Every structure is written in structure tokens, then in C-alpha cells.
Amino acid sequence: MPGRYLPIYAGDSKFPVHTPGIDLVLYILYGRRGSRPDRKGWGCRFEERINTMGEEKRGLGIIFHSGTYDHIYQGIEIALTALALGRRVRLFFSYWALEYLRRDTDPMKKIEKEPEYRQRIIMDGMENGNIKNFAELFSMLKQLGGKLYTCPGSMALLNMNKEELIDEVDEGMGLPVFLMKTENDQLLFV
Image (cartoon, rainbow, N blue to C red; front, side, top):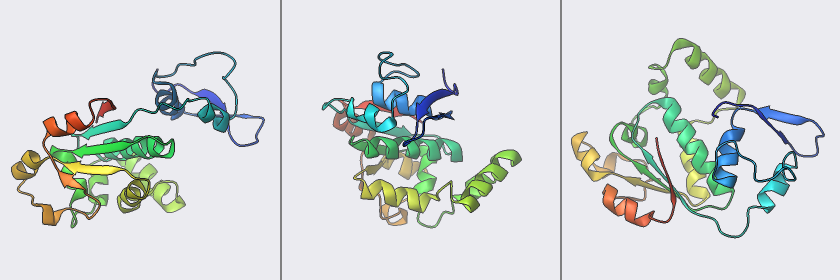
């Protein structure tokens, strides 16, 4: 159940840390949202949970379609979490999500389309250092081995060319090719 608060132990703390994002971490670790494989592993330290994942790690493919700030940001957070857990990650940007890959586009302009209370939360988070800007996120993604792909059909529709894209983009490919590359991976659509 998305948004449910579930306990995990952070570091050496004896007290549980409650976070709405834990559903995502559990989904990545166990493949089922909000599930726990057994009672024994529940409440153990996060590092111990990662060690119980086993050797087989599926890749993750994320197809970005929406151009809203929160969808793009959270999708990249999912990708970074998966990369940190040792998974292979491939991101496919199409339609309105491509705007975040333009060299000359300021993603902060996208925040202006968010409701005012979200704008305040995002801006406060950036000032406090809790929210990274997209340039930093894409840089971290590449440093961890993530791959960024663009849809040439969507680029043509939006009258974009590859020279307008940020350097972190690996290549353009159609959706069928992306799906063939990720056929054994877990796929998410954002």
C-alpha cells in the first residue's frame, strides 16, 4: 500500500525510522510492494537486508513519459537506489520527459507548474540540501553506471535534435529496441 509507514533500523540506532519511501525500497529489494518475506528479517538493519538479497539481480528499465517534476525526480531516485543496490539501470525518455534532457532547459521552470505548497517544499528541500538538482542527479546516475536513452520519434515530434541534449545521454533508440534490451529486466513506466 503506497505511502504506508513501515519501520526499518538505520545505522546503529535501536529506534525504527519511519519513512514513506520504504515501500519503494522494499519493492526493489523483494519485488513486492510493502511485503516482508519472513518475520525474521523484519526490523533488522538495512545493511543486513541488502546482504540477504542473493546473488541474482535483475536489471531495471524505466520508461519516462510524463513531464511533471515529481514523476521525473522520483523515477531518477528509483534508478539511483537500484544502481546503489548493484542493479543495471536503463532509462528511456520519451515525449514530455525529454524536456529534462535539453541542454538549455532549466528544470526549475517545471516547478512553477506544481501547486504552490509543493513549490515551497521543493525549494526548501533544495536550500537544505535534501533535494538535488537534475544536473547532479544525472551526473550521479552516470557515475554509478546508469544508461540514458531517448526516443527519436518523440524527439522529431518535439522538433529536437541530439545536439540539444545533455552530455549524459548515451544514445537514441526506438521503444522496440529498448524493450528488447530490457526484456529480462523489471520495467517501470513513469
